[in-house]
Image (tube, rainbow, N blue to C red; front, side):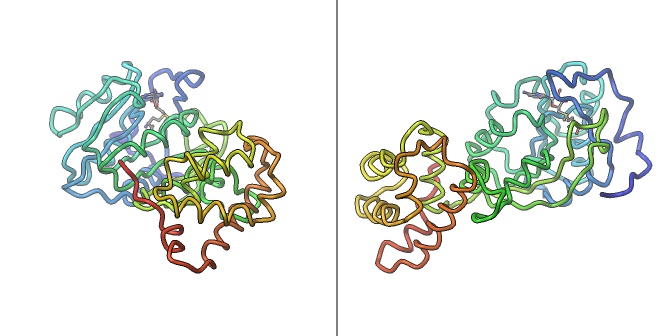
Length: 298
Ligand SMILES: C[S@@+](CC[C@H](N)C(=O)[O-])C[C@H]1O[C@@H](n2cnc3c(N)ncnc32)[C@H](O)[C@@H]1O
């Protein structure tokens, strides 16, 4: 954890009364953290950047120290208008008074934000739909961050890890304490840097599809679905190859009667580690395809 710096009043204006219950309003009060967010994102004059849940604009102001093409500051709470509106007078900052999950920002190339933690999973899906995104540098809950970066085979690997890693290469940049926020956050936080994966491994994409949309399925039905219906794997031979590998896995055999939502993090972790090992080892013309997978369609 970093020592607190003296707060620059331009970056940290006096706080308005805050709504922590509905809107998760925990304002970032650590100048080093703001600098780390901006330095990690490293936006350039070509970047269109979005600050989601801009609050008093602490991150937007940090971004303005760089020459960026445009900033979209998205905020739901109009009480922050006196803090954000002045930024639009001398810079290309567009304020959007909206739920960020409802806005359409096809030109955004970078997201730098301290969004409400409770929206994290929806935010990830929203990020995956941004066609021009090159990175997202985000303050997130530490527990979520630990799952996001967990390796298959480790104790923390689970459904969330799969969901994040199927769409992004993810790194943990720094840790923050609850006291780095005003009012203090409910739990420690971290800064995550996510880079969209142009190729997801077929296995991650398939399992992501299965776990997010078909969690009620039994493992044996999943195998049938993968072979004949999954939109993720393109060709018949690629489907067939992957399913054959899955069927020969002892972990999959052991989980045959289990519904996906009942697969524990521990079993999932074993399963993913084994599938990755098998596919890396496997010979044959479709092996490279199975590892590299199809391109993202967005
Ligand atoms: C954790 S605070 C961060 C504020 C500011 N970025 C900072 O770091 O000090 C989250 C902010 O998101 C806003 N917010 C919450 N839900 C939102 C939503 N669905 N759409 C847009 N803004 C939202 C809250 O009003 C709050 O200002």
